[in-house]
Amino acid sequence: MVSSISGHQTIISVGLDIGTTTTQLVISRLTIKNVAPGSAVPRMEIIDKEILYRSDIHFTPLKDHDLIDAVAVARIVATEYRAAGLTADEVDTGAVIITGEMAKKDNARNIILSMAGLAGDFVVATAGVNLEAILAGKGSGAARYSKEKHRVTLNIDIGGGTSNIGVFREGRAIDTACLNVGGRLIELERGGDKIVFIAEPAQEVLNQAGLPLAAGDRVSLTDLKTVAQLMAECIVELISTGNLSGLTRELLMTPPLKLDYPVEKVMISGGVADYVYSDFNPMSVAEVSGYGDTGPLLGWAVRKQMKAKGVELLKPGETIRATVIGAGTHSVTLSGSTISVKEENLPMRNVPVISPFPGGVPGDVEEIKTLIERAIEQVTADGSVDQVALAMEGPQEPTFEAIRTLAKGIVRGSKSYLEEDKPLVVVLRKDCAKVLGQSLQVEIGKEAQVVCIDQVRVDEGDYIDIGKPMFGGRVVPVVVKTLVFNSSGIGSK
Image 1: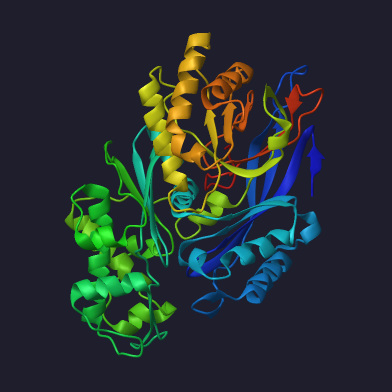
Image 2: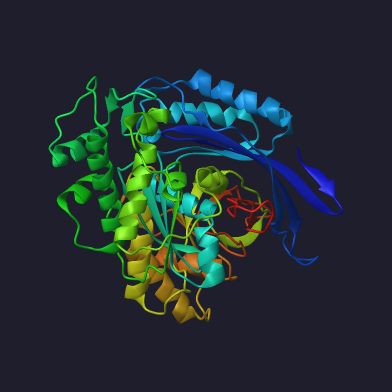
């Protein structure tokens, strides 16, 4: 429910993460303010946030191994709303994110669409593995740490089904990768030693280990340790070397990390993380299987493997809640002046933003091309993201020649993307969208779909809506849904 306090506005936002093992919810209050000068186009920014409520952590309900129980998920949300003293009418906005192995379930997309009806203008996304890595790294505090301490910081979010790796420099994601390694790929009887289910990636590990285990078998602690250690070795191998084993390559869901940067700090988040940072020492299968999976043992194995390789771990501000904190709250800003758009291309909704130039726009066409290609590949490779908006400051000196160079680089770097007949969306901070948009149109062809807007501040991980042109086509309304990341109770984006 939007309210005003001393000239500021506050909105209530809800984040829901439906993960491989757990489902959880976070409720936040965001304070927003128009930070533009009096005569300028309004620009609303988050100036404060407060996490009002963190739900209990629930096991994600399933009907079977291929279907999420939608009714049970809705019941969890309704229960948590009541516990928070909140009604759906009081919620202004939010995000519903489905992650890990849950994103592979047959009814995953229907689930998140039904959850989106809870309230407000929700961002709804099946978080592809690269996006999930970025959200988790921002929610854990790794991105913020990299900016404050000026250290390249790598975050590994180890959940039930996947290990999502995000690398951050000066607060921005510079690399991502994902392994099919998680604590719930082998399910066990709670407190027992009987195997209930083996996911396909875990079967690959069992094959590598030479363990002919199947659902219904009893399993020893020794065999489970062998499996966990192999998984842990794959994680450590991925973050430390380009010379990957066959098993690691088999479990990779993305291209490997580029590792063309120094890894200066390593954090681990996700449901398994608490066991990485604890002194847990498994003595029996019963100790391991308390949650019905091998998560505690995987945490133990990762801690052991990291120590063996001399990797010093830094504990993040958030562990199990990193992704839901990362994706949990988003805000709106208002219109940006522009413009180079065709009305028939609009409106656009929930387009994820990527920032290809963390160090500023290069002056070389080939370098621009390479960075654009890399950024688009990171978020579209797994098929979970269909469309993107390229966000950038603009040329360092917005001369006509610099804008032409930028246009050529953007078009060459977006070649594969544009061949799929997708609109090219460019969001600039500097006031040069009209000239850049016209230059892009010349490079691509007059029939191409180009949307180029300026004076809008967006960051990697945001979502953007662009409405129909107004005021004779001189302005478009822009809604930026800004994912709010830091893990402290309050702070700025």
